[in-house]
Length: 79
Image 1 (cartoon, one colour):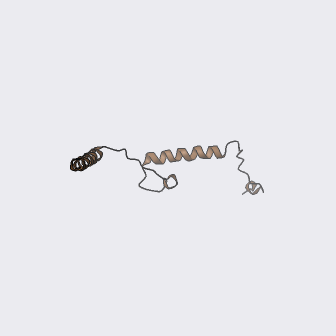
Image 2: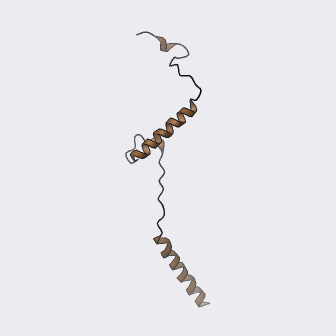
Image 3: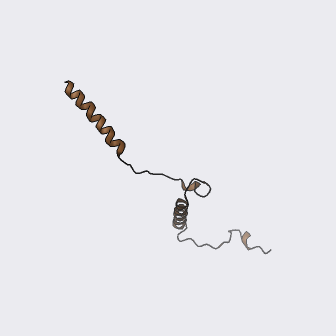
């Protein structure tokens, strides 16, 4: 019985040593809504966020005609 307990403790210690030496990849998640003004977000991430926002905008406005005129014709005033 004692040799099982000692074996279990040795196995746990070895397992902890093995896990402490393994390099796990580091993942970071950035919020694109803060990308333009937050100083801690890298430039590459800012560029990717801009591209994602542009793609999302294109999907939302696909098939719409941009006339730059308002429905009530307020945009046609002469100055």
